[in-house]
Structures are given as C-alpha cells and as structure tokens.
Amino acid sequence: MTTNAQNQAKAVALISGGLDSMLAARVVKDQGVHVEGLNFFTGFCVEGHTHAIRNHDRKRPKRNNALWVAEQLGIKLHIIDVIEEYKDVVINPRHGYGANLNPCLDCKSFMVGKARQWMQAHGFDFIVTGEVVGQRPMSQRRETFPVVQRESGAGDLLLRPLCAKLQSPTAAERNGWVDRQSLYDFSGRSRKPQMALAAALGIEDYAQPAGGCCFLTDATYSRKLNDLWQSRGKKTYELDDIMLLKVGRHIRPRPHFKLIIARDAGETNYLQGYRHRFSHLTMTSHNGPLTLIEGDINESEMALAARIAARFGQGRDANRVTFDAVLGRGDPVPLCIQPLPSSEIPAQWYV
Amino acid sequence: MSRYILDARNLLCPMPVIRTQDRVKALNTGDILEVQCTDPGALNDIPAWCRVHGHEVMATNEDAEGVVVILRVTTSTPT
Image (tube, rainbow over all chains, first blue to last red; front, side, top):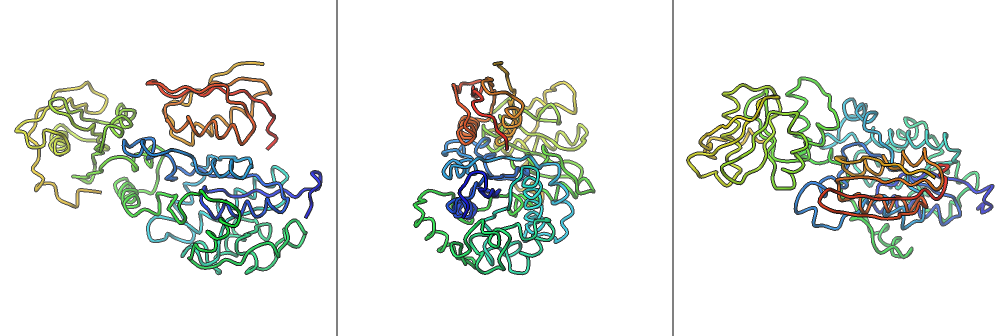
C-alpha cells in the first residue's frame, strides 16, 4: 500500500453515522489511504431534528453521528446540502419505492453519484461505502450492486470493503491502493460480523446498528407525505413542508385543509416560527397547543378547526374554550367554541 | 484578520454546520467567525466540525436567546 503522501491514494467515504460506513472507512484508512467523509443532507434525515424540537428528545444526549464518526476516525467530514437535487429522487424514483416512500435504490445511486462528482472535483481516487450484500431488501442486494455502480457513474471506482471479497476486484484493488486480502466477505442481514469487527478494531461506541436514518422509511411519515401530495394534486414539496411533517398531530377534517397541532411545548415553540405563514389558533382560556391550519379556510371552517384543536388542550372537557384565531394574514380575533367530543373526530381524519 | 458574523438562527442541524462550513471556505487563516444559532444541537455540532477540520473553537455560549460559537480559521481547507 502506498504511504508516501505524494503517492498516497485518496478515498472519499460515504458516512451516514452508522456502524457499517464507519467500519468501511476505518478499514480503508488502516491500509494507509487518505480518507475524507461525505454526508448528505436531504431534508428527510432523522438525525437531529426531533432532538431539537420535542421536549423529551431534547433531554437526550445530542450529537451528529456522522461528525462523531469522523472525529473518531480522524478524518474530515464534508456535509453537503442536496435538498433541491434530492427532490427528483423522492418524486420520480426510477426503481420505485420500498415498503413506504423510501426510494432506497435511487437514493444510493444518487449519493454515490454525488460522491463521484466530489471525487473528480477534488482529485480523489475512489469511493468507499459501507454496503453489505444482502443487508437491505431494496438497495443492498447482489442484483442491485451493479445498478448503483452503473447509474452513479462510479463503475469500479466504488469499493465496498465489508463485502469486497464477494465482488469482482475493483480499481482500488487492482491498482494496489488497497489489499484485497485485508477486506471482508460479509453478507446477509446479520449484524454480528460488523459487531465483531468493531470489537476487533477497538470500536466500542457507535450508533445503534440498522436504525433508520431516513424519515421516508417511516410508515407514519410516508402517510403524511402522501397526504400532502394528494391534497395538492401533485407530487411536490419544499423543505418547510417536509420539516412540518415531522412535527405535531396532523388532522385533515376536509380535503382542502388540515390542522397541525403541537404535541408539547417544544413543538409549540417550533411552530411559532411558522405561524405568520398560516391561519392559526392560539388557545387563551386554557393551556393548550398552538395549531397551524394549512389550506384556505372560511370562518365556519375556522370554527370547526377550533373545536378540534380544543380537544388537545386542558379545556377539552370545558363547555367553552376561547382562542385567538388568525385567518390568513388577518389580525387575531377572539373565537369561543365548544370542544368537539372525541367521538365526533373520525379516525380517518388523523393523517 | 477579520471578524464576521453568521446568522444561522431558526435553522435546524445540520444546516448551521453546513452554513458554517460554506462560510469558512471563503475566509482566510486567522479570520474569526461568530455563528449565531437557535438549535441547541449546534453547541455540539459546530465545535465537532471545527475539530475534524482543524479550526479553533474560541468560545461557546448558550442562553435563552440561543447558541453562539466563535471560531478562528486556523487552517486552509483545500477539500
């Protein structure tokens, strides 16, 4: 392996913050390769956002796992904003969706493709991922590995160190940038080989293996996104749309509007930042959450929204609950209503 | 050496880190950047980003207004 700095091979590693990508980068770095990490922010990343918003999550230790991994490995990490480009992956996946709205195969090709562009722009030699053949039902299968190589344009500049011995030799092996014999032959869904390797390398702390890192794999979140698209009659979104899907209860009593009701003080605080863009309800007679209303509504529909929102405050059993109601960009108007009985909120209203 | 302020308030992580990263690319060694945030996660994430890229964290502060991280660009970042 080359160790002279001038001749040292350079690899860019996709770093998710999970164990597999950490191990892959470490294995290659241990062979004397200069490794730097890339982490892509799509807007759907679970990382961080719920920590920042919800009360109970804010009490948990907070760290960006990708940055933490980079620090443990002693490599640079570049976090890339791909929000705009990623929309096409989510909206028009060539290979379709997984169990929910997760376009995993398209996503992997997209990210490896972005890594290829970065590699070429920065004079690096090859790309490293933590993929393991057979690990994921959609994107990490023997049949899909060549698809990622082809559609990303990476070809055999893509090295998967954890299962390289089960693949044909890549450029990194053929050129002697890495020693194939020191790579691995992991396969299948078991995490035991990765955990054993982590232990052998002295890695004791890592993010929980196989944990979802993307909201698109979550059934509830996917249902909300689908509802958003159906209500608009087209598959589009902006960053604020997909952020708001992570927050609050979403209740759609009519096709043309829905309520976003904060679940705790942290979410109310977060939604405050959006209230100037939405009709909204602030409970004044009792403690209760802020409610945003997405969609154009009239005064009668505002009253219905208030009756629903009243169910989620401390006045749910009171005869009357009062709100400051803001319709569109208007001024706050007192609105006194009777809370809707829970029996009159059909389950199908909950998105 | 110059001092700059980056307003990353009302952004959730990792956006404050991304904005910091992009801003630092345009600065020179020795420049000081004060990053203002509201996401408490920035208090950990921006210093972590500084450590992996070799920049100096001069000070951090968290109060009711949010989080402030002051860093000094100590190395050029060719990549």
